[in-house]
Length: 155
Image (cartoon, rainbow, N blue to C red; front, side):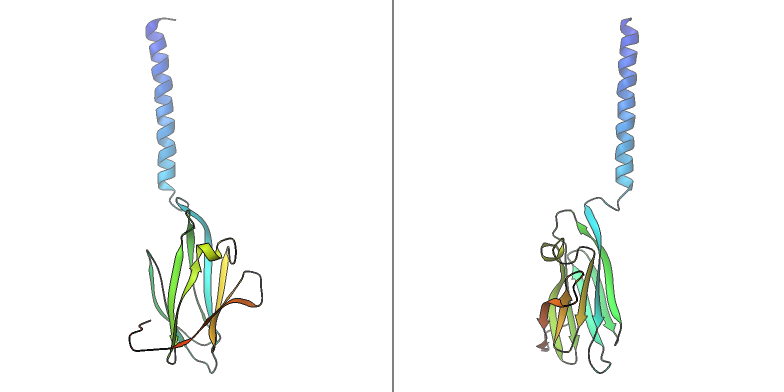
């Protein structure tokens, strides 16, 4: 095989590898749904307050402000997200009703991912507390009791 043919062959192999590598990068870069994330989680919080009472909730993460929501009697509020790859995802909320308030972590990966609620985190707002349920269980495992609201707390 001549030197020119051998150099052409090596050049062709290198170009082919370069094209394949470029195609892999392009495919990865355009498929952003799973980059840096794990599975999807649904978090919902149901209104179980007495006397057809509404409550207000405002949830945030480091990156997202989900806004303020009024949840009517018998309804629920929920949102979906993907857990980040590092397992540091955190959503925290402030909730209030009739002079009571509470601030709490509605989803904390270190507590919830793979331990409490891998796919679905369920919460209820009751007259005495906000309670959280471990996935698949009928009894709550987290109780966050209401505090009397002061003027400096804004939900």
